Image (tube, rainbow, N blue to C red; front, side, top):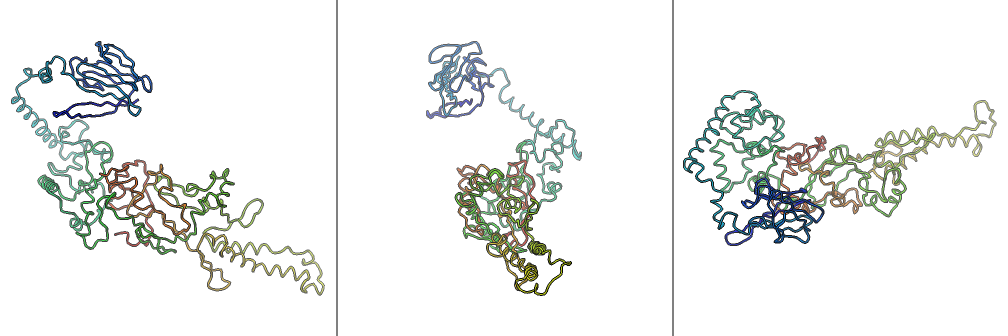
Length: 603
């Protein structure tokens, strides 16, 4: 059960201030002690005055635990059962607790309605709880604490630092200079907890990049420092003040620690704030006139349309070009595959799926999952494989021998031609016994219409039957032609049939990151209009408007506030952005690379 505690107070002008908090528990306590779930600083209330227990979905019980009773709807008692739907009013000292129910939660409004006990007026509370006369005066205490702080947090930490300077790893005990730390190290640097000098090389000098690259040797920068300096926008007054303070404390500009900040907590390292990126990319083309990058200030309000790397030239060495989705790009992957045909719920494909339910787990029609299998990390999908995903419906079998089917070699056109010629060469007509080598032949048996002429005529026709079968396979209506782009031989009778290679793009967004596993609660049709696509050339990627239905800038009122670091990485590589790595701790490294020949990806 969840308790909704509302602490109600009033301002000097009579306005009501409500501070809600939730406690997920089956029992909570009320009392004067600070450790109680409901703390009532009133001397009329005992340190552990009462306990509230949940009896059911709408009933609770209140029991006095400190020996003193409490009032329920004006009646003094030490135990009471309350129906939260009907509600009740409790009085403990100068406080009123109103019990009700909101959204299935036990709601308790706590409000002080009278002066505290042992005080004639509310102002007497200061005297009731005052320690005046038991401690030294304010001036003496202030000077004493100042001296104590200087000794404990300056002199002793300096001595601790100097005494261990140059030591590779300090003993695992308390060190006074640890009091200077603003918090524990993140998971990434937990191993350095007892080796402060690994990062803080010199006293009172901020961490330098040289300390970072001593371990992170494979990290490269986003741009050359000179160009990066020209790309940065001029900071406002607040930014200039912060830059001045950083300069006083010897903190360099553009250091690794500007982005990767430590001592922020023992969990994952905090992702980069959006302002770190928009400091350059907002109005970038005004400072770098030669850049091809578009200005970006916020994903929800000021972000260009996605520009995926689309295959513009197919073949053995395909060429990819980045094209904006608002230009409706198309690509020739070398494969003829109408998604609309295969996802129909009424055509022959659907009926075939229904007949194969038991063997392959299909539904009443094919679904995306029947052909697209996610990778082990869930980030992308494996390439569609003919044998694994297509052959169950598109069989390439051409002969059965003893219950075993012989199939054409998929992806090997020359082997297909060789297999068909070998098949027809081995399937000569059965030779009549009268034509064996021991039988006598009479004149006239060679004439047209006679046995000898018929047999050898059929045997001579086998090569032409193989040619016809090869042409049928690679021509319209054939097993290869229906799915692939075929180029026939230039020379008549030649076997130089050419099948355009198929290239399945595994990553369209070379400069961005998308994790399908993080979107597994959504349906494929929410982003990909596969059910409406009747051409294989359609690039079925969702535009930025689709993403904005859930994602907005980090300060936007969106379902998922999203900063730049969610999809982009400052250090260009093939891995996930930093903030995505933190969210998916079990993610495996991605090894796929962008295909060769990609144009314009560096811009």
